[in-house]
Length: 295
Image (tube, rainbow, N blue to C red; front, side):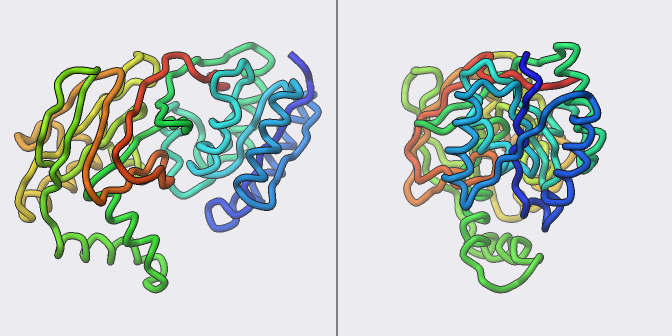
């Protein structure tokens, strides 16, 4: 493996933690004998272009510094290649690192772990989801939760409370969504649901265990369907997501599948916390799609 590796940095992650985290992560890698080249970008498209150039140029690893949005961007560059991904998780949610048991908001420790993994060959091969030309590592969300994201993203006021306010506003307008779904190419099912989450990983939103039993290397998604329910029931079920105990509720069902087709009117899908686009879409679990530096 080449001793030159690429640090892929989002300086704005975690309200500026990305910029501060790059230095201790780079120092840990250099102390281990690696030559570190840093890649930034004027915007997401430019950053991805530069990351792909580094991968195509034979970099020994792409080490992403930032939150789940940055990890998602890095996945677009390394998925389907032999280039391993390192994770320096310093964002707000950090669900990708959490699912892999990697350090969170400890850039020096994460840098040392990546360096040790590179030297020892400790690389874990995991699955990824794919929807169209987008790869995702954690959860594809649709329904109530994605509508909260939509509303929160539109709000220009509320500060750090805007997503709490968005939840309240969506609860006020709450109603079940008519979906059409197809699991593993089977018959189309017409159902009403509050939300449908497609999990390669187990958590989203900074530790909400929406697909609590999902495993990242079993070749399958865990699809959590929260069925049609009253506002009162949703308020009872939703807090249980933080511990994963919502899966036992009668209104919740789980399917393990390798692919799913989702269709619903006026619903945006989010993957790894980033907007993916309006339904309909097809998501497929791709076994062994990426190699991650891990213990």
